[in-house]
Image (cartoon, rainbow, N blue to C red; front, side):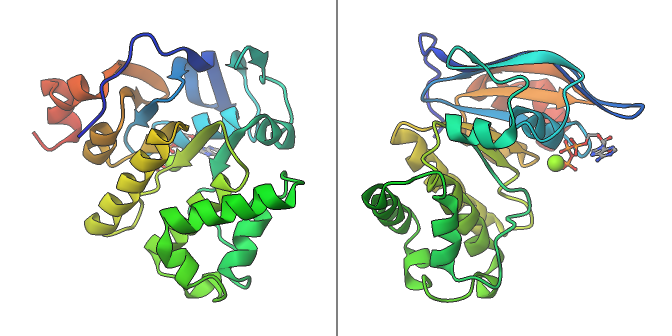
Length: 245
Ligand SMILES: Nc1ncnc2c1ncn2[C@@H]1O[C@H](COP(=O)(O)OP(=O)(O)OP(=O)(O)O)[C@@H](O)[C@H]1O
Ligand SMILES: [Mg+2]
């Protein structure tokens, strides 16, 4: 099911020597990542490995202790979060974080705050409804009444409304039944086929490796393995450590 990594795809984001510390805790310890245009890259690892911290650093939401982040040739290292979003690097909020007292449609419209053009926003909404028909059915209902899976779809839809060039996702599978996870991952794959570059952080290593082109394995803040996702899926070391043998 996973795609063939294309060696020729140009890097869209390059991360060099990224480090993040919380006081004395070195959460991310000098990692290098290359996210290639048009690919799904996944960063997998156990609880506390530093996955969320890495994403927060790319979005400018935590302070970097060291390293550089280059996006399409521009240096984002010290850029403010709202400017990073405006450049097209959009993170799906962790834990869904939908605004439960607003409707589904209002949540989606909030995601389009960077888009001034009305017809662009309308086209974005149509695209999200096409990807997630359930959101269309529930458009005028409160987001708080959606199921966990539907809220995750809404969180992804809201990020898409900002017209990202790079979509960052933090464990979209968290707390969801396997069948819902498959559904969401299938849609991520569809979004990627439409040309969007995706960086997917996951603890669900098997599913993530199945949809990704390339993968990095993070352990206590360091990259310990990297390669084509398909190769990692078949790697005995990965199987023993992350796929239950
Ligand atoms: N705000 C914080 N203050 C202090 N330490 C933190 C903070 N956030 C995370 N940490 C620590 O940094 C390390 C990396 O945490 P992070 O949340 O990035 O891991 P993760 O890979 O996303 O884990 P999970 O799979 O549980 O979400 C952990 O040791 C964690 O306890
Ligand atoms: Mg996390």
